Amino acid sequence: FTTTVDDDCDDAPSTCIHIYSNEAEGDGPWDPDVAVGETDIRLRAERQWPGSGRVYLIVVEATDACGGLTTYASTSVLVPAVTTLASLTALREVADGAAAEVAGKAYDGSAPEGFVRLWTSCEEEPEIPQ
Image 1: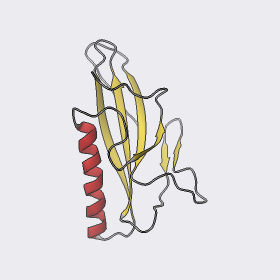
Image 2 (image 1 turned 90 degrees about the horizontal axis):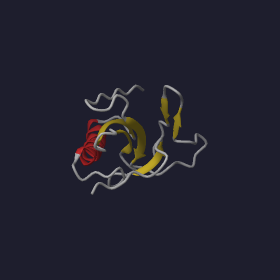
Image 3 (image 1 turned 90 degrees about the vertical axis):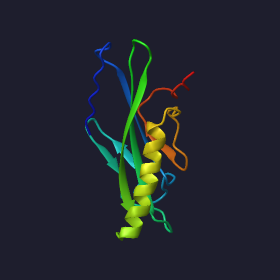
């Protein structure tokens, strides 16, 4: 997993990563749901039953030192319950909705609606923009 952040006024903007899921942390024998290494992120390919499947949303948060401008980018990983077109379409809609919330101007770094935070590299909770 690689991120690149460029900023006109800050040579080294601060970055952190948040990982969310539309299902709570599992309690099965394959805990934890998220394992983060130096250069990789491992996500558990298991989902709760019943349901259409699990969506992981990975959000990169970057903040510059010049004006405190924070921007977000995201990607998603789908773990379908079954690999039917209907199941994949339903999961994609959930993922797209969460990504749209992250891209929205009102996003404050908290979990998108219907998602829980599983892991973050931030040392403290993000501030809500004024």
